[in-house]
Length: 174
Image 1 (cartoon, rainbow, N blue to C red):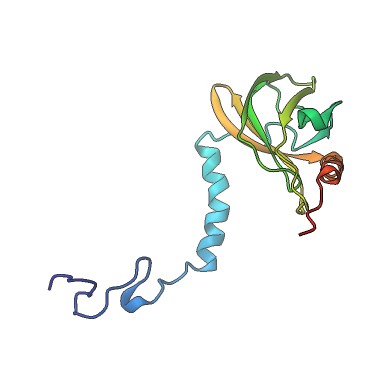
Image 2: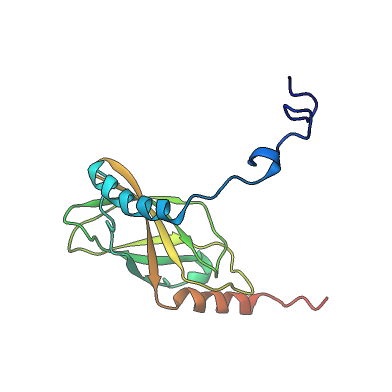
């Protein structure tokens, strides 16, 4: 029998998208299958030639440059966690203290043993600020392969900058 105007094969109501027979949700995969997948994924990634993370050090110092309120940026000092040059082609800041901006082009090379400082822009201050860590999401070129890595930012510089910026915003006494 043809499915007509919202009816199922038997003439009853059609199943909603993503549901099983008679509108019931399909069964969830068992925890055992998830555990096997969690163990197998890293093993299979090693077979496929996937890169070993971290490529850059997973935590980086962040400092506010002079005139930061005018430039709304932060300096992030990167170092490699591998024994080869890493080209940082782009980056952006994720922070509960500032609005997110689109990634910018960077095109700087981090050489093993030689930390590199890059400047990334900050969005408008979020007043009141949220909670949580701040990080830089970086686009890397390693051996001709484009990769993305998140690096946590050390220190409370962004919280301080946010506090200073929010202090300049007039409070709306509606």
